[in-house]
Structure formats: structure tokens, C-alpha cells
Amino acid sequence: MLLSVLEAGPLHGYAIITAVQDRSGGALELRTGTIYPALNRLERLGLLRSSWQSVGERRRRCYELTEVGRRNLDTERSAWQAFTHAIGSVLAPATQPRPVS
Amino acid sequence: MLLSVLEAGPLHGYAIITAVQDRSGGALELRTGTIYPALNRLERLGLLRSSWQSVGERRRRCYELTEVGRRNLDTERSAWQAFTHAIGSVLAPATQPRPVS
DNA sequence: GCCAATACATAGCACGCCTACATACGGGTG
DNA sequence: CACCCGTATGTAGGCGTGCTATGTATTGGC
Picture 1 (cartoon, each protein chain N blue to C red):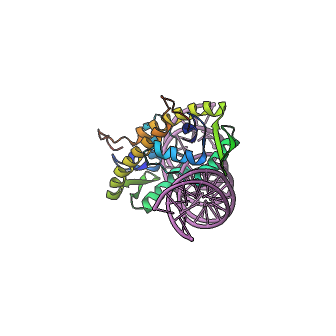
Picture 2 (picture 1 turned 180 degrees about the vertical axis):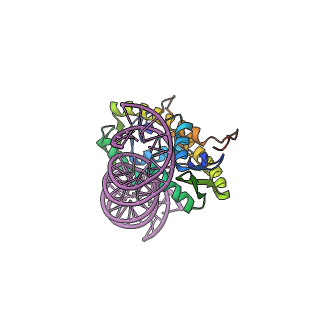
Picture 3 (picture 1 turned 120 degrees about the vertical axis):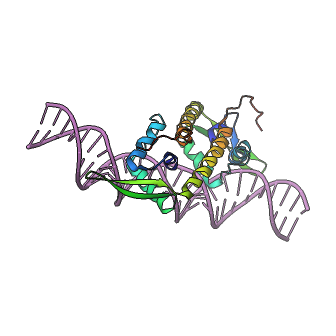
């Protein structure tokens, strides 16, 4: 999700939180203790690149996708599709009750 | 998923593993170290009921949904739907690139 | 003057999946 | 007869990571 909201362009951490919240219609509310460590992990993995900005007296850390991160986003999206599809198959209610073995 | 495969009728642990594997088309392969503790947790929570069976010299522990477990399955299914939908919204690629703030 | 929103970050807890290991029966094959 | 695979149940420890709580600082509105 973090990679996904950065696809359209660089954002800083706080904006990423609100972006995820907005895109999910308020359903997903990531906390700072969740995303800041996560962003660090992604940067350490080389999927993101960060740079400090100054807006007046305030500092912002701006994150942007690397080329590796962009490719990774594609594979992760497919993986998520496959994963949810698999779970969906297991979760699908038995419309036709099978005989008990 | 465990509750789901038990919906059609009681199964023992090993059969649950193969059931999940079959239903997911081989994509999901839960290991014994995963499901046996999980089944215990679900039983402790009152969602499952277990009983020992004897097949020849071999013993089986047979799990079956309780009424609470059956209701829980319904709510969990809806929750999973909502959850994946929310994530899907965040993950959806930006077909129309938004201006960078 | 104070509080909310903006903005970043760390520390510790809890949860649960995974790997690896342990045990044992039944049936087939070399 | 020995061996191994499939069936069957289980525990122990490691590890990742999301969550809660806490800390700091600036900006702007009431």
C-alpha cells in the first residue's frame, strides 16, 4: 500500500497516512508507529528513496519510489490478487453441501 | 478459513489441512505447526468443539463448528470482504495520474 | 493562551506464522 | 525383514511486524 500511494508521485510520511486513509474510504488508519518503521524498512530494501525538505521552519521527509520499488509494486499487486483469490476460494460458502467423509 | 472448511461438516486436523490446500488450488499450504495451535485457540474461544475418534488403532481429533463459530464465520467473511476491498482501493493503480501536491 | 493539526520518531508488547523437531501407526516395496 | 511414505497429532523457539504509548516540535485558529 505504501508503494502504491507513492506511485503517482513523491509524498512525505504524514501525507502517506492520510492518502491511505482517504483511498480506503477511512477504513484503513495506519498509525505513525506503523508506517515510519515500515518506510525505513522499504528504504533499506531499496524500494524507496527519501530526501529532507524544508517548509518554512518545518522539516519533511519526502519518499519516492525507486525503479526497483516500481517493479516490486507490480509483483506485489499480482501476489496480493493471487493471495486474496486463494483465500476467497477457501472462504466461499459451500452452496452445494458435500457429503461428510 | 478453518471455520469455513468445517462449515459443511466435521473434519479432523489433517483433513482440514488438505481441504484448505485443495480448495485453494494448492496455493495455500498450512503446516501442522500452524493449524493445530490455531484449532486449539478456536476451541478455547468456543468457536469449535472437538472429539476423539478411533479408526482402527489410530486416533483422530474431530473438529466441528459450534453455533457461535457458525455465526462468527459469517461476520468474519464480511470483515474479510470489507478488508480486502479497502486494501484493493488503496492498491488500485492510478489510471488518471493525480497532480503532485 | 491553549488546543488541534501537522510532522517525525522510538520502545515495548503481543500475536501468530513458520521451521524444525518428536512421536506413532498403516501399507507398500525392495 | 527393513525401510520409507503417507497419515495423524502435537510442541518449542525464532522472527517479523502491527499496535499502543510516549516524546518532541512547529503552525494556525479560537
